[in-house]
Length: 368
Image (cartoon, rainbow, N blue to C red):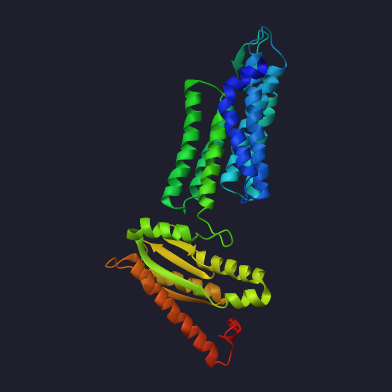
């Protein structure tokens, strides 16, 4: 009867958690560490829900059970841990920052654990009646602190993402936070397990959608995303740069595809430096890249191209560039063709320079 009653009250949350576990187990994208921490989060959400249900059951006893204050202390401690792990999953952080973030929780856990004796946060009378101490709002303040940090970190981490992605992220976070706030204000329940499950489930759904936009090797946006932005962002694009790497086939044929992959990853890092809301880099083919600049001045674009060229000059790889400013008198496709034409002209100049110096075309920076 106990189990049936619990299942009848928490079946939505349980369905979300099972779906999340199935989702991450079939994933070919997620890092092993992400899988481990997500599994831990699912376990903690489930544990928190069970403990809250058991604590609620002990509240029906006529006399105080020693387990009730223990369960209350554990629940107050687990919920901030869930928020910390969700924060770590959605916006990765350095170990030092993670340890600093855990410090408030580490201070509060002993206070919760000894509260039945000190009466600081909560305590129970022998007739099993709850009483709040002088620091009765500490659990809410602690959880509120981690919710605030979660909001700020997500804002900073996702600030350079496309606007539509940011809207989705804001919706997920605000919905979860709003539900918790409503629970507290209306005193509906102290069990936020379903809200936590919803938040991470929606986050992973968004993550999978975003993964479909990303080139798995370089981390740049892929060809599908490139075409999407041509269709939906034409009015905001003020500059197009076409980039083509020299001698990728030679690298693959001579040194193996690992060498070619290393070259593409290195070039991608050079191209994507200083990326923000004004710049988006795409891998549109094997060794072909495109850069769109959004509402950026020509001065900004030319300076960025020079920074990229300088960064590439410090590697062993060479790329041809073609830039076309967007005047919006013609179609974006026509401007892209102009950028491609300028890139091929630059590629021809690079090859000519190599031959004039007596080098071979498959030689790279040492011949330039």
